[in-house]
Image (cartoon, rainbow, N blue to C red; front, top):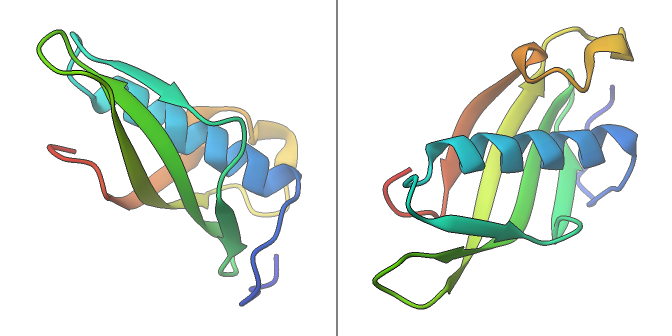
Length: 103
């Protein structure tokens, strides 16, 4: 997996985006709802199956109308070129997320 300074879109960036969204869904307040876009704004491979995902999520709470957040997620796939486990969240690690309050 090669690094690229240009945004890319491929199967692994799509799965990385999905895994970031799944992680965010588990971490937001249980009384909030999150609506994710269908694809990231940008995605980069930074090498060694590590990705930077830039995307949007709309978060609504009971007390407040929905708020659109722009987040950045850094995520790494742990099984290298064995892509058979790419859809399993246990094979990914989140190195950090910015742009979302209380996360």
